Image (cartoon, rainbow, N blue to C red; front, side, top):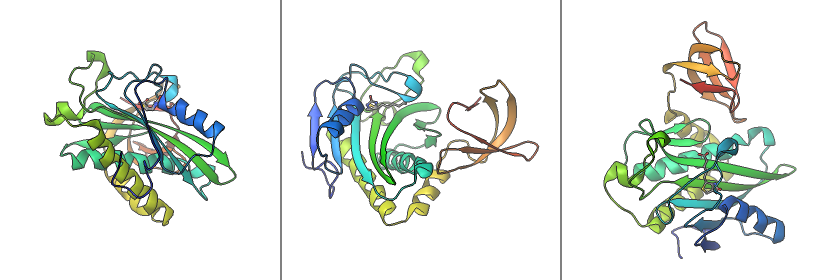
Length: 250
Ligand code: BTN
């Protein structure tokens, strides 16, 4: 498969079925030297993994389940959320290019259309000093029409009425990932961060939040730090910072 990219997907592995593309990528990295920009796509995952130990279920053949392996040089572990920001912005732009309105990035690792989830990211990193090998796992709903009620999910076809070949969407996605990977390596991260924040769900909106210690408070999201902290100014004007799982928007 030829993608419109310089290096992403030049090494392309397409699998009918696998436990998880992220697991496959991790095994590959353990066994051999892997080219920067290697892409694994599966049509079905027996054990798709989501955030926080959740499962990721996807109907066979209808959606994108992919892992992209990128090497990042000179990135401090405390700035590793930059990789997530870069990926979220790439998925965001893929969806807007496909003419979907109301796309938002939901901290920490989801992409939403309105109040429904269309994509989830699972990024797993291996560090050697400040060099990071990143397995960027992306689940993106493309042609699935029906979702369980409780899932609160949507897809490209539900939003646009148009079915797309998975490879067409993957080609756009890989182009965007590579674009932001290159911007990143040119030290233009601030550009990526600005796009990330301007499309972040609930930014600067008054919302209720629930903490893991069951505290409910009012506040506004004002920033996301490169270490992954969500920054909220509460109604008393106090700045609070939370990691994943420590706070939820009600
Ligand atoms: C989430 O929303 O919790 C993250 C979901 C990530 C799913 C993708 S599908 C491709 C890759 N392989 C996996 O096992 N998970 C990610």
